[in-house]
Image (tube, rainbow, N blue to C red; front, side, top):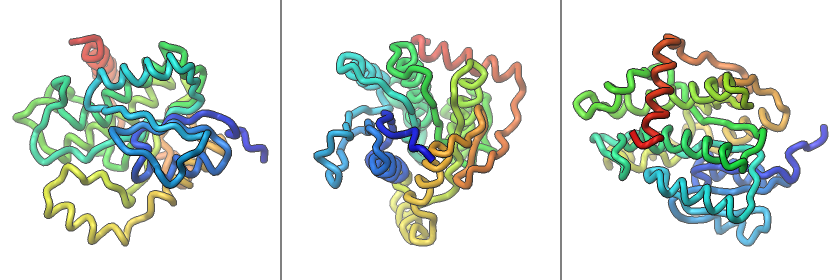
Amino acid sequence: MENWLFDKTILITGGTSGLGKSLVLKFLKHGCKVISISRNGTLVEIAPNKNYKHIPCDLAILSSVTDLVNFLLVEKFSVDILINNAGVLSPPEYRLSNDGFELSYQVNFLSHVYLTRELVKQKILKQGLIINVSSPIQAKGHINLDKALDENEYGLFQAYSNTKLYMALFSKHLSDLGYSSFSFNPGTFKSSIYQLQKKWFQILYRIAAPFMVSSKKVAYGLFQIIYDQSWQNGKMMNRNGIPNQIKDQDQTQLIEFWEKVDWQLNGG
């Protein structure tokens, strides 16, 4: 089978650790050009590499996303595949981003919506594929946005579940708008997503980590779906290439949800 991915440009958020790092290495191995996005750091083990570019960007700051898009525009980058992968496990206590949104809501979801829309608007991403990393925990999410962002209603489990549902719904929304997009369910695997958690949680996580699936194996699953072009548009695919059910939503509520997201990104 011909490697249709050869020389394609892949932009991966959260590309210096966990699943993102494994994806970077996998795509580079198959002749792709890769742009890695994260707050700091670079993959020193593959530098220098003419096909690899790391660009600092903090998804907790919307202006940082704007700066990223402007840089890509000025440097005349063109992106073929966008993988919205970066995320944090919602912090134990309610925490706001610099832009005034609940932190995990912005980092896991809102900034990815903003990045995607700006890449499309500036024609950096032309008729490309958009992949949004979700989670099996999306099944526990809700789209009552006002309640979900209320400090008095905050709980880390619910907040995180909500963001992963929103990422799955984002792919469906993009598909309905005519874009090629699917969400990805990586299952439970070894990652560094626990960094905002309390010390006892981090210790328990490190104890359990050796028994979890590696990020390398998960990356292989996602890569294979893309390589084989076996995704189903608007659907959520697991690492074995099988479509998973996205939690059903009331259509009127969905319309209101996307209107509220638009309102947030337009300055509220």
